[in-house]
Amino acid sequence: MMSINVPLSLLEDIFRLLDYLGRRGDRDDLHFHKTGYSQRFEHDNALWELKLKIAKLQRHIVETYLLTVDDITEYERYDLQEWVAAGNSVYDNPYMIYNDAGAPMDFINGCRVGMEMDEDSPNFSEEPDEIIGNGRNDSLPF
View 1 (tube, rainbow, N blue to C red):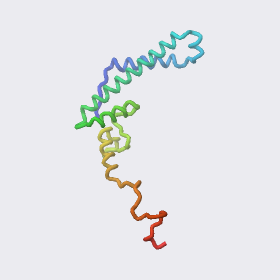
View 2 (cartoon, one colour; view 1 turned 120 degrees about the horizontal axis):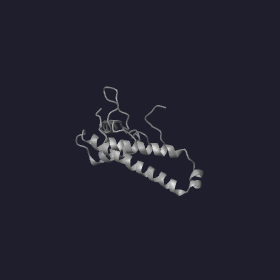
View 3 (cartoon, rainbow, N blue to C red; view 1 turned 180 degrees about the vertical axis):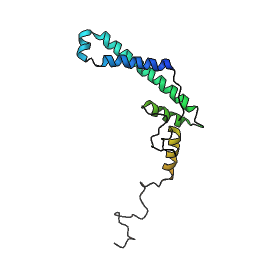
View 4 (cartoon, rainbow, N blue to C red; view 1 turned 120 degrees about the vertical axis):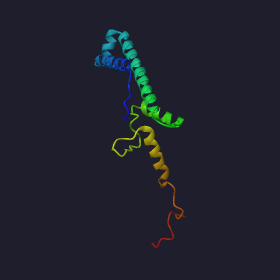
């Protein structure tokens, strides 16, 4: 697995906001009503800023990962961005496919293998040609 160098300042900002929100999160709505809406506004701003920082971190992780992948399509790029935005790692895949070492395959390679497996598997949703009429197979002896 390749390591991703994340700017330290970005991580510091995220942890600072998490700390702030953690200290503010134990206060209930009654406290906000007593103290006014300025604290709620500060809380909402901190939450919004945290979401922006996390999105920036996710973009950085995806772009760094994409440097290691060959011939990625736009569909794969979109699926990867959706996967990471949902809180998943670029070093995991929705098919739960593992490599020879027993570690999860990265997203793109895991999806490519999963799609190949889907194409190679028989389609059991189609009805067989032998079924006729009321669902009985007349060629069977019973």
